[in-house]
Length: 115
Length: 118
Image (cartoon, rainbow over all chains, first blue to last red):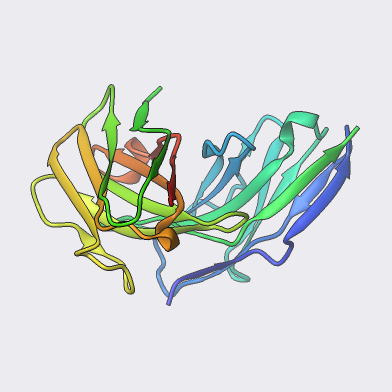
């Protein structure tokens, strides 16, 4: 079974500080893709960053970066210089290559950025 | 960027009635659409995958006769909750993918529909 686990239900960080959200996954596939999505109070799902499993280089997107450890099946998200607008639910997600390409979500981490 | 429009954004209906939710891809052709359900403070649970012109594939535990999915065109998928009950009250989100291969077609999400059944 393919699963995504986020062990931190809630986290808090001070504005301008750095925070890391953890995510582990389980799959027997070799070709897959990992994502972090953000869901603010508006409930709109927003893609934050994505990583192809075949790429060794960690993805970065401005203040957001990942630490992808394929052997450990770990995919953590680092947010630098946290801003109040980063307050949201963050979901780690995973999809394998193939016709259906369905996206499996973790349970989410509620991040609160404190002023 | 690619836009997915979901309508209505919220709906209140009485028990026993049916409700239809629409998901449209506005500026791309969506060969595959996904329907998710989200309970308060919980994750998104995949309900079904719909492919244009074919029957939807439902996840285990999802009643296909209760949650009817139609994907008759490359830009529209609909989810109909039939004979709705209060326990069907939830937030429903659609997402769409177009093209071939995920590199050219990441998932685009609608804004969701909050369904309340009284």
